[in-house]
Image 1 (spheres, rainbow, N blue to C red):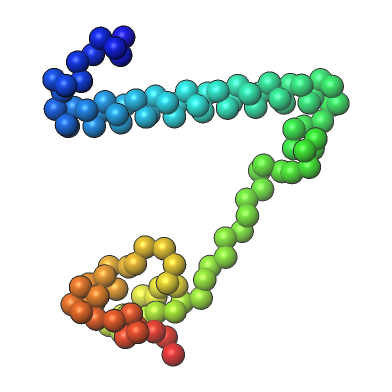
Image 2: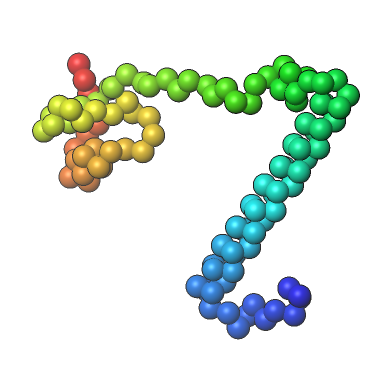
Length: 110
């Protein structure tokens, strides 16, 4: 099927759409494969030992790690409620100041 497609006749936009659709299909199939394997492992664990997979392997997949919120290192002088830890994407007010040749040091909380 794929071999018969003439990719050279497709536009870049069409090729990107095709790639996106293919990636979505791959993700869907991978999730289904993982779910099937998980169900199979749960059935085996339950039938042979009466335990859950989590109990067999000694972990709980339902527990989530608590995310630690970092301490603010930078503050917007125009709005003291706006702070940033220095982690993750830079907030717009930092980006705008840096675009105007500002420095991160100008926003350090002392």
